Structures are given as structure tokens and as C-alpha cells.
Image (cartoon, rainbow, N blue to C red; front, side, top):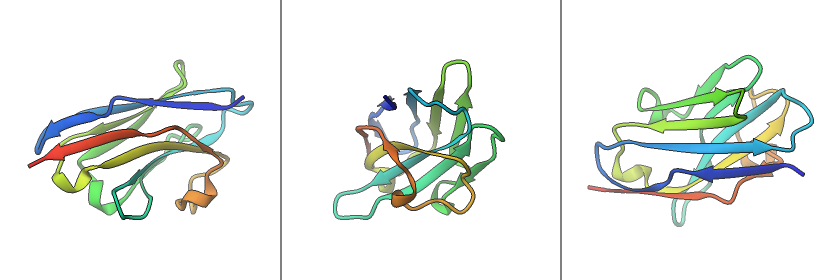
Length: 125
């Protein structure tokens, strides 16, 4: 049974940092794309960062480039999202999601089969 478990959300002042973790288990294949999505109240769910666990190629939404870093620890089957220089507009529920296969060209929520429960990030100005 595939499971994605997020942790690391919380409240922080603008300019601060948080690190989110997504622990994955139950995958039969090591090759997958893991993404962090976020959804603010009343907004659409958008992919902020993606990583291919085989190639380690990463993709970022323009709004988080330079500030966020996605990484993968193969030994721990965990994907991290380091978020620095946080802004109030980063406030949202953050979700970890995964799909078997490539990342390139896949960034809409319907392209991802597996989802975590979400973790709240709140940035106060």
C-alpha cells in the first residue's frame, strides 16, 4: 500500500524558513516523480516543485525559484522541500504527491496518483 506522509509545516514570520518532509513507502518502482503542491483558501492547487527520483532533475514554479529547494534522500525514501525567505503569499496547505514515471510535462494535480494528507504552512507579515 502506497503511503505519503508529510511533516514539517507550521507558522513562521515573513523572511523565515521551514523544511517540509514527505516520507514515501509502498512503491514497487524506484523511478517516480515526487511533487509538492500547495493550495491557498479559495485558490487552485498548484505544483511548486517537482523532482525525478532517478535523474534528480528538479522543476520549480516561477514564484518559488531561488527561495525553495526540493531534494530526495534515496536511503530514507524521503523528499524534502526547503523553503527560505518565506512570504505571506506562501501561506497554504502543502501536499506531497507522486506519480510513477517522468516529471517532465506533468504538473497538474490529475497527473499524480498518490497524495499525502497535507501540512499547513502559515507565514505572517
